[in-house]
Amino acid sequence: MTLIEHFLPRHQFSERHACAITAPPDRILDAVAAYRPETDPLFRAMIGLRELPMRLFGKPDHRRAPFGIDDFTLLGRDETSIVYGLVGQFWKPNYGLVSVSDGAAFLAIDVDNVAKLVLAFTVNRDREGQTRLVTETRVYCPNHATRLKFTPYWLLIRPVSGLLRRRILSSVRKTSEQGELHS
Image (cartoon, helix red, strand yellow):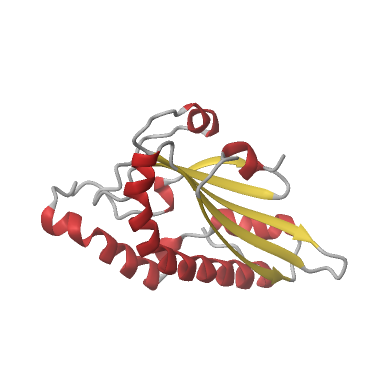
């Protein structure tokens, strides 16, 4: 069983993107772990746009940094995968995040009104020495009401999410092939 299957075997929404990288799998996974999406100007702009309603109409928590990779929990890592998790009401202006300490806590959450999301990066080596890096996002909504709330949000953010995932893959490929890691 893969890590993504372990942490989220059932889901209603998913998105996958992949690229080939000329680098060993361990170097690629290290580059994934070191990657900071907050360094991408497009990511910062899209998060700023996503958080605009919260800043304009909500009660923003001025102590909270903009949404980023630190909001995710590292659920697990093995020789072929890194999996991050997030739990919340993502359709709400403030994301409705639920604190998750680790993989066991993620698995234990059983709440009707929140969605569970996993973001996985998996490497597979081929015979020619290329490594295929796949990123997959899965979302599980525990009931019909939660699915109804999440679906419009998914339809709105999915194109941008896909663009950002492809940018992550490109950055990880460049870093991995150059053999440089930045943290």
